[in-house]
Image 1 (spheres, rainbow, N blue to C red):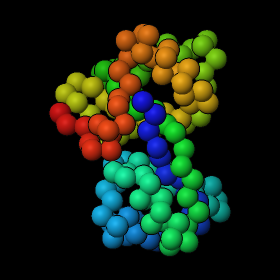
Image 2: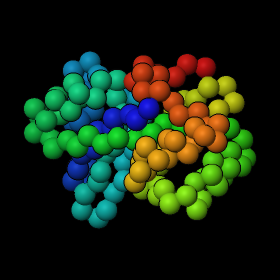
Image 3: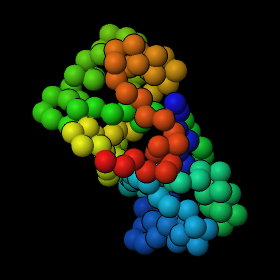
Image 4: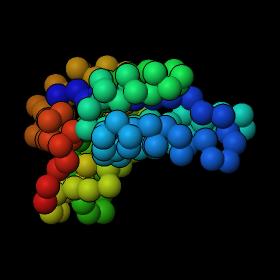
Length: 146
């Protein structure tokens, strides 16, 4: 149920994001979703790609330091309060959300969000027990279809 995400540091300078994208494109690796967080000096590019092992290998070979982390994709109702309802399930559980971001696609009336939990196994168990769909990795890597 956990998905592998690639993370790499980039200088906070114009044009820095293009080279990792070029490298992945040349390797035939599709970017499923990404997020970029920045500070004054650097940014962290986080990507979910169609083949994380080949993506990490291509980026590392080009000189990027690539970290592979586990994240969880969760489907929530795509309506006002959908996210709040899911977050309420975690409230008081002791599971911490380190960060989150959205996918660019979903299914019909469902949205897909990516979460980095401090305890991914605990979060998955809690969410599944509450009837929340945790998206299978293969679906994410291949792309969720409506």
